[in-house]
Length: 266
Image (cartoon, rainbow, N blue to C red; front, side, top):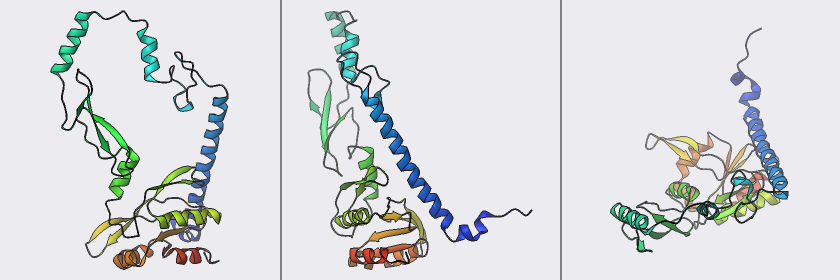
């Protein structure tokens, strides 16, 4: 019997193969998160407790003996002998000789502890830096968002909206009021959606491979959505024409996207 090439079958070429894979992946994420929540709920009924303060230890750190480094230090320091003045003086001299103070640091003690404060460029949260570290964002998520956000943004006013996606069981970062409105409309319409990965496309004007970032992907409909205003449409006309040939895509105003998604042929 001749071997069948999966990629040459009608089932694969029609897109049903990819659609079913994405659907199964979404369902698997939901099942995994449900099982995880069940384990957390079971653990919380009788959690491990801190050996120092007897507070419950969270599920994520259930293997720890203490709820914090402070409790661990307090518990272990009870077994240590008091330090002599000679030992304290020796430690002070050693630390001062190795101190390195970054520009803009603030002296908090008479020893070598210097820290300085910065404001995250993405979420405006104040965070602390020490030992000469150089960062512009408070977390890895904000760092990722900042790097992606360097691209030209023409779809209205930029916002940082953390929205809980019930289909992925996690918070996702939406970047405009239009995206926020589409997300709420999809949820109210019981349409499954996820935040998709970027799509590679070739820019004939510059002869370079670039990344296109669609805003939504509907696994059940195998459809991408990208709300754009008229200014954004005019500036990205060539890009959208190239991307349309690669993926099933609906883009434009909020009203246009809602009407097209609601059509039976999708």
